[in-house]
Image 1: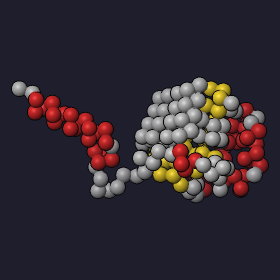
Image 2 (image 1 turned 60 degrees about the vertical axis):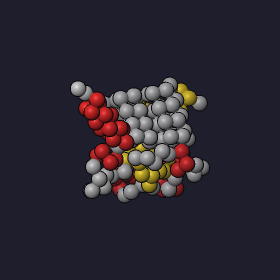
Image 3 (image 1 turned 120 degrees about the horizontal axis):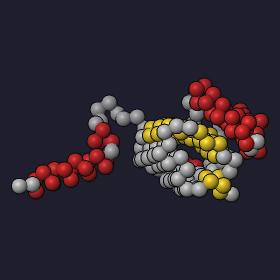
Image 4 (image 1 turned 90 degrees about the horizontal axis):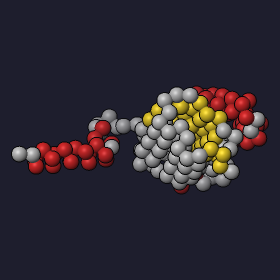
Length: 171
């Protein structure tokens, strides 16, 4: 059940959130430095995120990671449905990559359990090795070396085109 509303951690620049339940829509939208562990989220999670870390220990809604340009999210997906819910316009979806991902994730989940006594967190920690294979990592796709920022962000192209039109229209 949803226990915290829409847009939790909107524009967060720091701090942390541990919620033993599901967040509404747009969890961590424009998050630039906050840390969160929740047990599910609605649509548009981590939209336009620029920094921080989000850990989702349950179902995530559609359009996850749209416009995400920084930070990282880890999503627990025992049912194998999450890949179809990710907006891959700017992000890569991979399995955990090495000890640093595992250490960060385990530390955050252990802290979540210590603060909330979440049965979901306890089950994941108790079956840690098996649970690791069910996590996805969502992170911004790196810019290619020969691509400019304008080529990566269609909003910048649109702004540049509008600026050119306005410049031509000026007397």
